[in-house]
Image 1 (tube, rainbow, N blue to C red):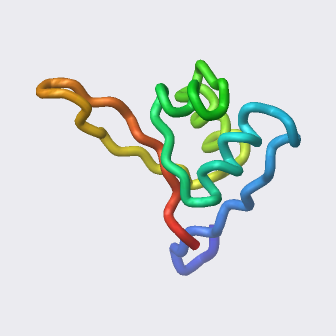
Image 2 (image 1 turned 180 degrees about the horizontal axis):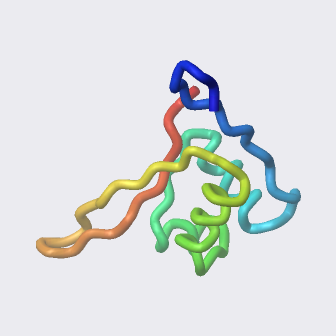
Image 3 (image 1 turned 60 degrees about the horizontal axis):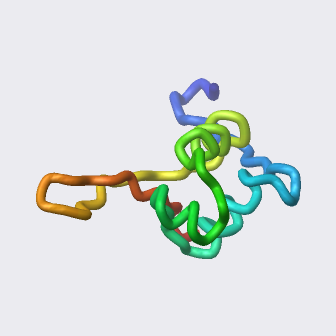
Length: 84
C-alpha cells in the first residue's frame, strides 16, 4: 500500500477459456446480469455463487450483486459488473 493511504488497484486476471468462470466473466463483461436461474438457462452453470466467488477472490474481478425481488416475499441474487 502506498504511503498516502490510497488503495492500489488489483490486477484482474482472466480465467482459462472454456471454463464456467470464463463464460460467466464474458457474459458479465458484455453488460449481462445473471441470477441462478438465468445462469443455468443461458450458460449451463449450476453453482453460480461459487463461480462468482472464484472470479472475485481468485481473479480479482469487481463483481457486484443486488437482491432482485421475484415474488411477494422472495428475492434472489443478481450479479453484474459496472460499465467501464
